Length: 282
View (cartoon, one colour):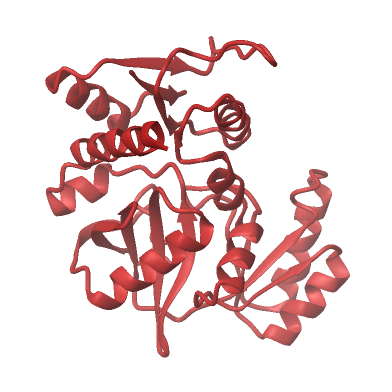
């Protein structure tokens, strides 16, 4: 039986449930608000679990406990650990030789300001954890840098006190989001916007993007670096080639499906069944 770890039921979860019912595949909703794990005890009676949680902390611990009990998950706890943290994602990709934007991590406001001045304006300041393009700041000058750094430091959370500083890549008014399942790059979209943040959760408009050999190779390289699975890989078009900007381990795919016509739920169910079969044989 397939387990679906979920919190908010969005278009994606509804589409998955519908596809599972249509194909007569047994599944169980593992709702976060009712889910319980007895340490050292039994875990939900499912054979493979798909993570659709929107809460990184809950997701990470649930996947860790499931994996420890021998239940395969998509994605694994290790993949969630890396991809749920932008610092770990960038450092893991860079260590594997995957091209990423120039990035500096600093632990104090003074060190962050010095790093920004050395990198040159504009820069992008990102939170360690987060999605949907939230809490991003494009810093155009020193006054803005001082103000934003002070605000983040004053917020008090240790995460806001660790500064993730990235070069501003002068891409076209778009980025590329590709979806990977194992060794397949199932498709890609352009996300185009007048604003520099192109997420479809904000103002980005999705349109089909051909999966070129370069895109496929880079996506597979990035996926392998973080542990593989079902991933959305965001690419930036730089003058010197493509860069991997971020990786999402519980991607939404409403806009992707609308732009490409690709049935992500059916392909994802097929992938889950392959993961279960592979683990069963192992």
